[in-house]
Image 1 (cartoon, helix red, strand yellow):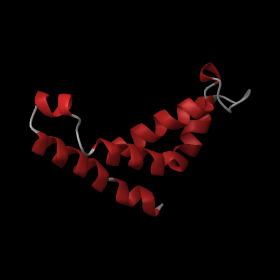
Image 2 (cartoon, rainbow, N blue to C red; image 1 turned 90 degrees about the vertical axis):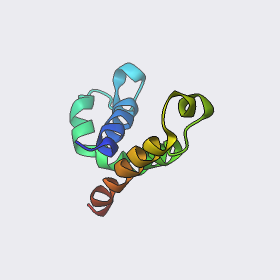
Image 3 (cartoon, rainbow, N blue to C red; image 1 turned 180 degrees about the horizontal axis):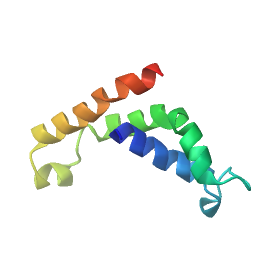
Length: 84
């Protein structure tokens, strides 16, 4: 599972989960997440693009160049999902 899919599933779960006051109603949120997570892929990609630049505290904790490469790799994985 790509990082984009993982983030998209979390966003979809938050949107649909009754426990989070979401839109699922009586339908099980897990089923809706499985069916609809791709609808949240653009939002997941936006989250990753936001994370591309670490804040000062994150940058101090490690190598910012490695961070950039890791986030860029996750963004690159999004291309096939965006084409679906």
